[in-house]
Amino acid sequence: MNVTTNNELKSTIGLSGLYYVMDPEIGLNIVDLGLIYEIQFDEDKHLITVIMTLTTQFCPMGESIVDATTQAMQERFQDYEINVKLTFNPPWNPDMISEEGNEFLNA
Amino acid sequence: MFTAGTNSPIKNTDYRVVLPFYAYAALSFLVATLLISFNVDSFTQHHFNGKTLAITHTMALGWGTMMILGASHQLFPVLIKGKLHSIHLAHISFISSALGIPMLVYAFYNLNFGLMADFGAVFINFAVISYLINLTISIVKSKKTNVHAVSAFTAVIWLLVTTFVGLLLVCNFQTPIFSKSSVYYLSLHAHLGIIGWFLLMIVGVGARLIPMFLISKYENTKILWWIYGLINTGLITFIITFTLGANIVFSLMPIGFILATLILFSRYIYKAYRLRIRKKIDGQVKISMVSVALIGIPLVVITGIILIFSSLGHQQFVMLYGFTIFFGFITAIILGMTFKTLPFIVWNKVYHHIAGLGKTPNPKELFKSKIFVANVISYFLGFTILSFGIINTNTITLNIGAILLVINAVFYNINVFTILFHQPKLQ
Image (cartoon, rainbow over all chains, first blue to last red; front, side, top):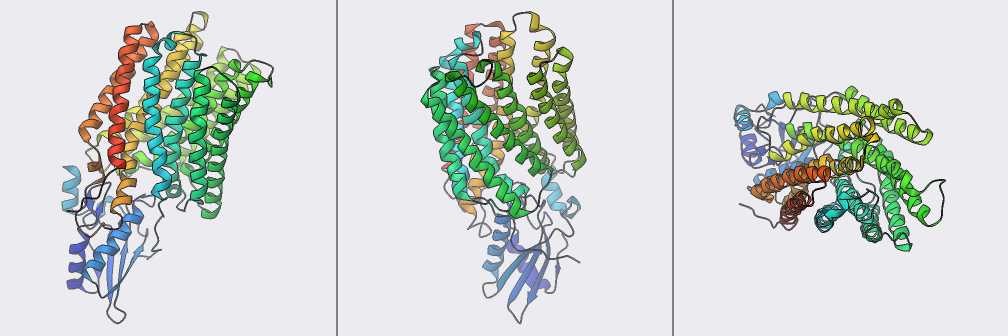
């Protein structure tokens, strides 16, 4: 898990919420799956930008995962506007799965 | 450095469009198995009889086509990375086919090719045209396409050709349109649907879904284009040999193309399996993979019919050929894929707005896994026993197989309707 951020403390709080967001097909949370690339905090605009990906561009659950990510972040940062952006550059690959995630998938 | 993209992922099709198709297909499957159990004698007769026609069309249209239409309304926007053009056209497609199928089946059951059959066939064609228009405009708007979307789109065109030929055949029973009787053209009508619609759609979309569910790193678009070309060439070759008449060598050509398709597709799925990240495979994906192997059974049977049995009484093998297609690979892949797609659609409906706020159940917890296992066991037993019953025309064997298939359909319906009526549970 390697999430780029400009605020480590707040990012950790955010990630604690994102552990509840599951990829429903895989049954693993999106943090351990390596879907979260970046969480940026703009204190002037009270804006949080989450840059994330999906395991595949064809993911039928994409809309649901993005909405759940927004809701989980909003739950923890109620005074902020949450902007979740999808990217496929770089595309997700299995090396992005955390050690815990790999243990879960191989169990 | 990451490149931030859009914040609007692929929009899912409204569940109200998709779920009726699933419910209708599940009930049709039960009806088809009940029709078999009440009419097992029809398996010992010539394949052109009212009961067999009714069972075949309940399976082909009510079960296979309705299920695929439902799933593809959900999956097609995913394949073209766009949005379904119109939910109204999707509703029209459902209502029209939902009305047409029972009319046609009822007419066939009573061997009455009158107005009921005409209207049934017209409704079904109208449903397919609505669906095709919907897909075409969706593609044009999306401007993105790939081998999976092209396969699915081409399959729908073949479906329209199939249903239109079907309409003409129904009319031909009353007023001669063709030079020969409709019975002569049955195999053309059937293969347009089996190869052009079912096989092309299942292979095209299956090549996307199965690796995705395995979380596989394997992807080879070139092979998939070859598969696409081989299926279409096989079907066109069949149409030419059927129309012009052919000797045994030419009759085997379409089988050769489909066999090559099967080998390439099996190899593709195997490679995806080998390069999968998820080591533990669930039962739904397993049965979908088994269905790939089941495509081989009708191929062996039809080759046998052409090479060996054509000089003998081969009626039972023709019956077996049809049975292993509709109750073999088509049913097997639907049994598996239903529980890889429907729980997600319902999960999205129920948990979309509360996901991320607490622990939600996994989609696979929306149905009973023990019932799924019982469903699969009764299916394979029923399929195998009934297949033997068809070959040896033994009524007891046919009855046992038929009862097992009814049990399998009951289990299937229990799970499908458990999912459809799922209520939210947030921990």
